[in-house]
Length: 510
Image 1 (cartoon, helix red, strand yellow):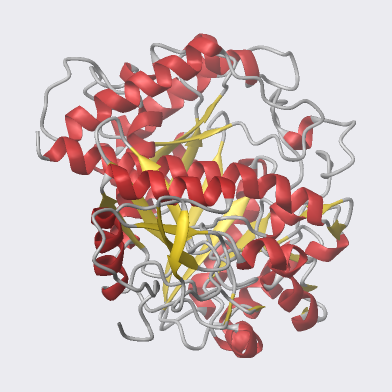
Image 2: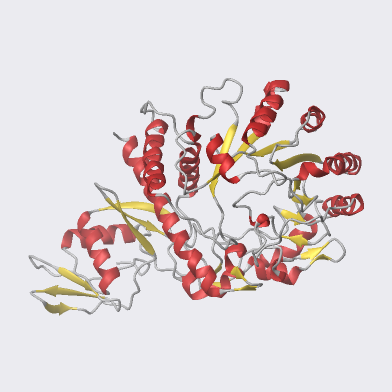
């Protein structure tokens, strides 16, 4: 066999041949006695993840970036090897393993050094390729949402709502910075964020006017995330005129939404106000729904049967896209608690969503949450495919390029890689409008996986990882234990996505 093949075995004319895989090599065994071991070589368990559906057996190969179906016999042999460090394999499974090895499966390449491949180019990227800035025009909000980390005054890991606001002069400097650092981009994105950004609508109007004056030659895409309670006809007209991507926070049915999203002044729910303003917007500009989306935060303690069909029978709103996410409790004192009915219903809805995707009518409205899980699974499926073996130097796929795709500029001009990180953490500050980018701190963020280097090098989910600096930080420093906890969650999430892909593939042949 060729050297690049994974397993080296001496064939002998035996009626029954078994191979012992003991982590140090493989010995051919007959009647519990070793009869040949001349070709045994020291081998670690290959960088794969074993997967099993109700009917078939598979593994995901990290180096190949592919899912491969295998026999039950080979699956059991590999599983025993993984669990005990040694196993036996029958001839048929051995031949199957050799054939797959010849195709490049079971390669045991592991990254030797954790370093992001774009590290040498980060400074150049920050100098020329900044694509997206988000202006934190205010830290104040007219709501006090129960799960909002900015509303939790006892939190030590994130800022609170405050009266801080961005001045027009600071906003001008931010736009100038974007122009100076996006010379390679024909298109740039300017987002407005809070708090509630519409509290500073006049500033937004001024910033848009300035951007369109100085950004000539570039296409500008504007975006705003809003609770929609302050929308007026004048605001609607302005946002539509400038083709804003409008993201509105709405958390399901009235009961579910109003449980968490309440006015700061009187504690009353905001659902009716949001729906009224949403209808006004769509009523004035019905063709604008393609630029409008709902951000629905899912409360796992709630079982919301109406969330999936809240717009389905509504001619005005049924075309509005809905994105979902479970409450982010990373900075919260109180962690999420999952209602058993919520989990059961979510899994059942996901199954029905698969049926719908495959053209099998389910006869039931599907929740937007399940649709988004399916979309993510399909995206993950499209990312799989034959790849080169892992290089000697690389980093898990979770970290973005700091400052390039989602640069947050706070009210005082401080830079953070995005709006999702802790603004109380000094290691997340990657510069300011006054000093420019801090390339050294940006590089540390880009390579935050070095704190779990040993774990990452041997992780089967290396290519699928989404653990970024946000999940690697605790109390102002990178923390190995914090990142390791997130790793366990991520590995399970990756496994679930791969099983979803397998289910879709199997069901497509039904």
